[in-house]
Length: 253
Image 1 (tube, rainbow, N blue to C red):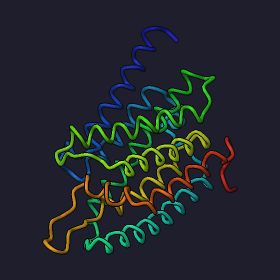
Image 2: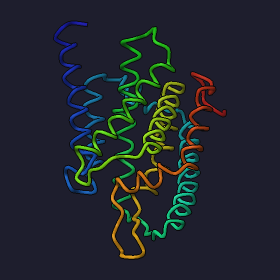
Image 3: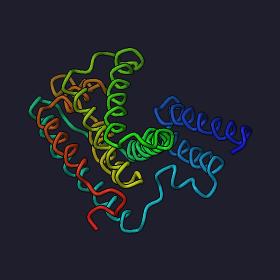
């Protein structure tokens, strides 16, 4: 690869990360901003890799894998709603459904995260460090994943504060699960299904204290739901199971 072509690709990859940060997290306060970011990310990925862009973005799924992705998304969405509402009711917290704007935003911002911080990051590291074992890559990136959440909630986000220890541990285990699913399958389908199926009930819906109708902030939601021992134990089991999934095959088919 020529130096000029390498520099062009590197510039496009850097731009993809910038677009993700700018469009996926409501810095542009429109519900369709994450959708716009998704379109731009795909366009930039095609410019960087041409016919291989589906591989690098993790969107190269077979039809059976697409069907299983939808099934997993529905199962996790249903299960998450049940357990989150159980935790909320135990803490005298009310629930309101998120509207279609919340749904569209959550759908595409989680998809963008899996493309940029999942497929591109993991495949880039594996391309650079070919001999590094998958489990090491998974754990290191999961540690960074949980650390970044702590830093952003502590010093960057508007409603800042400290994530509790159990919430940080759950984020780490979630990162391990997501990384393993992508490294084992080569695509982001199952990782996105788990991500969206959990995040929409937790952040796409609305929770409030019944005593005063004050809405929970994202920080409070993370600490309440991810800091629940039942959630942490469930994610621990899923993360452990993900290490034993077959690699390079259509899982469960």
